[in-house]
Structures are given as structure tokens and as C-alpha cells.
Amino acid sequence: MLIVAGPTGSGKSDLALEAAAAFDGVVINADSAQVYRELRVLTARPSPDDEARVPHRLYGELSATERCSAGRWLAMARAAIDEVRAEGRLPIVVGGTGLYLKALTEGLAPVPAIPAEVRVEAAALWAELGGDGFRAKLAARDPEAAARWPASDRQRLQRAWEVVRATGRPLAEWQRAGTAPIAGQFATLVLLPPRETLYPALDARFLRMLEAGALEEVRELLAMRLDPSLPAMKAVGVRELAAHITGEQTLETAKAATQQATRRFAKRQMTWLRHQVRADIVLNEQYSERIRPKIFAFIRRGLLTGST
View 1 (cartoon, one colour):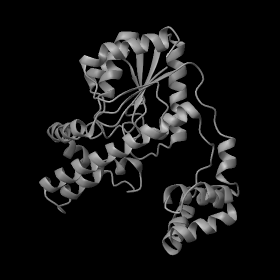
View 2 (tube, rainbow, N blue to C red):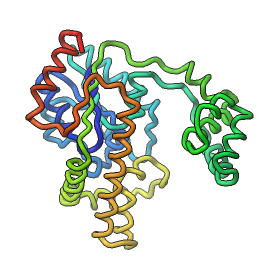
View 3 (tube, one colour):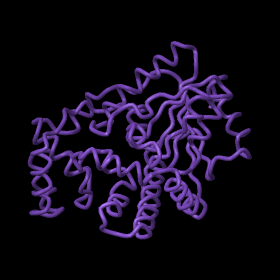
View 4 (cartoon, rainbow, N blue to C red):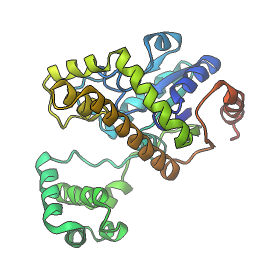
């Protein structure tokens, strides 16, 4: 299995497409937004022509009315990888959702779904106590988690409290009993282009999205009257363009806001990939034909001969 990771706009989808064509591969989506069928334009999903050129899996797989957790994606990805391997083809997993990639390679703790009321309760408790107070309260229920993260790490501390509150078991117990990582040989390639080239490319790409119908796509999504908490409604650009569609801001303001949100999103992705993904090769540039020979040599060496 080949894993191609990188922030949005890094060229990873083009790389996966070329690799699939060259090595008899199938491209498998690991992007949490591209899994929703209503968001082709705004999430820069592969085009119909690209999908016709080589097989693609898990793109537009779910309705925007559904929620795709890391656990649900992992189950779908395992099934897709097994099918591709059974066909004698190379699975090429591509995406920028770090949690999905980490679940695939390191496994996932089988924590049950947390009830909405517990999440609300946790958020209210944090607002009432602040980081230090919340961490102290967590220590009474899950001392290991409280000791593991600083009081400033709201996301992880709140998650630990939700888990022990809802299940009665500390988060670490669930993690130790987690789902095993994917079996078999795999190699991981990460694209990390410099911000000074990535950000302008992202700005220009969003303008092309508008020309391709991004506004109409969001308008149709709003017409579905979905719960704002659904993941599809939180995709980058949905909230910003929705504010223009409803008359809350001008198109120029919505453009600038979406471009800024996209740059921030890419920055978060790069931070995660640098620190959380174990890469066999990291290329500090966007994918282009110039570096294709180097990448293809890595694929041959790492997957076809068995030595990365």
C-alpha cells in the first residue's frame, strides 16, 4: 500500500492519479470532506475525467446528511484496501486528514459514540472552570489523562473527560484495547510545500472553484436544511459562502474569508503531518512532473522491491 499525504493544494491527488496509472493502482480517499458527494467542487475532489482514467474509491461515498468518523472511515478503507489487493492492484491511499491516516497505520481506540448531552456538558464545564480547573476535575476520574496533557490543551482534555464520563473507563484503557493498524507492507510519502508557494496557489484555486460552481454547490447544500453540526456543513468555505448567499456579507468578503480559512486549514494540516505521521519520504515542494521520477523511484524501491 502506498500512502500519499499532504495539505490541501499540495498536488497529492495529481500524484496519486499518476502513480495509479503507472503502477496499476486504485486511489482510495483519506480526506474527511471529499467523502461527501454534495461537495465535489468546494473540496477539490478528483474530476469525472480523473475518476474515469483510474479507479477511485470512497470519494462522494456518503450523503452530507451523514457523519463520517475516523472509525467509520477506517472500516470503509479496510474493505476498499482488501478489495483492491484481491484484484492484484496497488492501493494508493491519499488525503490530508491526519487522524484518518494515523488510524490506518497505528490503529484506533474503539471508543463508543459519545452522547451529545455529554459533549455539551463538557463544553459548559470548561467554560465554567477554565483549563486548570477542568484539568483538576478530570484528574479525579482519569489521572493519567490529566497528567498527560497541559491545561491549555482543551481538545484532548475535554475528549478524555467525555470518554470517562460516558463510558466509565479512562481514555487510555480504550486506547490499549484499540483496533489494530492495517496489515501488510506500506510506504508513506508526504508533500510539505513551503507556505510562500502553497498559499498563493490555494488563493488562485479558490477563484477557480467559484468559476466551477462552488456558490451553487453551497446553495444546494443549504437547501437541504441540514443540522449545522454535521461535518459536511463545517467543510472549509461552506460557512463563508453561506454568509454571502444569505446576504450577510459581500462576495468579495466571502472570497477573502474563504481564502484565509483555507490557508489556516493548510497550516494545521502541515503541523499535524510534521509531528504525527511517520513518513518514509518527505518532499518540501508541491507535486510536479519535475519530481515525478524521484517519487516513482521511491515507489519502486519501497513497494515493488520491499526496501524503503
